[in-house]
View 1 (cartoon, rainbow, N blue to C red):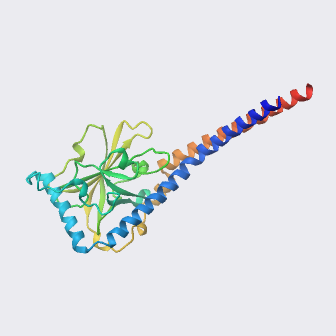
View 2 (tube, rainbow, N blue to C red):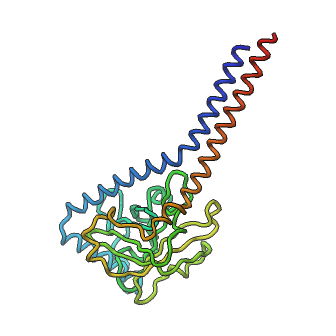
View 3 (cartoon, rainbow, N blue to C red):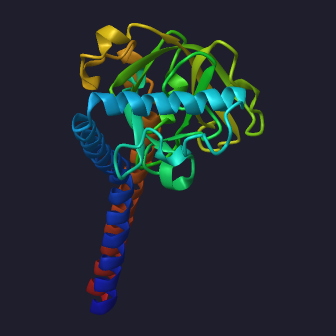
Length: 287
């Protein structure tokens, strides 16, 4: 009887801890991934600081040549720079980072959109223009949404037309103003095509939350306050509508729901264990 009581206590303690752990995991996971990304971005900036301006200018030029080839198809494949080496200044393969103040997110940008890249930050769609701006370019950046351990693009549905998106690539700051938000099917690529003469950026993620059957596309066009922004640190940028970021965060709302469910589960286990413990003690007294 004593052994059964101990086993029962251990079982309910384990279940209780699982409930608490499930409730705490998203907050801890998001904090941890943000710390890792912060280190990655710091290393990226340190790497840039060691590169001569002339070399940065040349790297930017190579990316522009790649974009021209992508749009016109006039450059021979042998002369076209290798995609994986373009804008690559660190061993991590980061080409820059994207900041969306309205939803308070900063993500490194990696070459490609495989799970390897998307698990770490935003991925650049290889079939789109490199994120260096210029006429007749359309860069597409994708990131996960709905991850329990990281916000990434989960709150992209809170971005509004008129919000600003910043790209930090090499020693340049590129600014885009959101002008179009659409939802499409995964096989519909019309909205991410290059438009002659336009300088566009599209942020892409899965939607709706939890089912991911469609794609949310947030498009912006290039504006030019870049010269005044280039001397500011990325962290100094302020959200255009902070109330939206704080109070309507999709990720935060889902976390609160999960936290409530986890705590209720833990409380239920605690109540059941107390109830069963009382029954066991009552039976022990009677015997």
